[in-house]
Image (cartoon, helix red, strand yellow):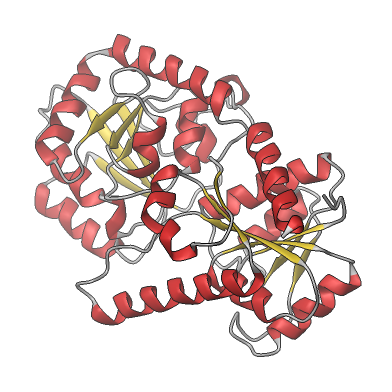
Length: 368
């Protein structure tokens, strides 16, 4: 296996789980002496976090991720730093790497699947096109394809047939509540605090959580805090108003103190229709925050019902409401689920385990 520099290529336009993955993996590779370089197309939150963490970051001088000069400039950058292994995240990064000049091995991580947008034919068509382009790019470079969950590999592995495929779960460095002693602004003290963290989009099932909250009696004092932004916000604000939940729901927007918000909350809700392996889940588990989640994707792979969280069928509002009532009335259950989840994270979903698995994937890529 080559021990030279690794280039991690991503768009860098948004900031979510894939971007936290890049930051964690970059830190691991630096500790291993692999000289990681993060290459992005946008100078936004991820680029700022790389600079903060001391990770070398390059923002390609292109007009967009589809600029025809992008592959040439990417190839020149890789050659200048003698990079022989490129790790791509997302179809735009994969396509640019596929078209870049030069000889180098490629590993690609599949973090999730396209959102169910078939009701919007244009968006559905774009999603299918982007998936096809990513598959084409991986085939062109004979990439090793890494799925973050076994569920994703079962669903999409056939697209990458005859390429080396592996499942590598995400992992994090353990977190401790004691590291976040200051209660963040926006958390009321006389309520049980529930969080939902992520983009405000349909796939997250936020509307389901709101409908469930409306069915919870007043003597179970849950207050739901929505962390994140997205195009669904106006519709969710309207739903909150229609359900009469104005004093039980807060839109906190994008926050950089998410760990502190988790450390001072009582529950994480993930009522998604599908998921890969969310970093938010692992972070909540590490902090001992109990999780109420849909029985889908990586949520179902990581959580064990009644042991490390509560799982409900996707889309089942009555089941969500019943679980909220149960968790609200049983503080011992919340503590037990959180404690056991923290132990599982520390045993099975660590940054070290993830990083070692990627070193194995890199070895397979360079051997192709």
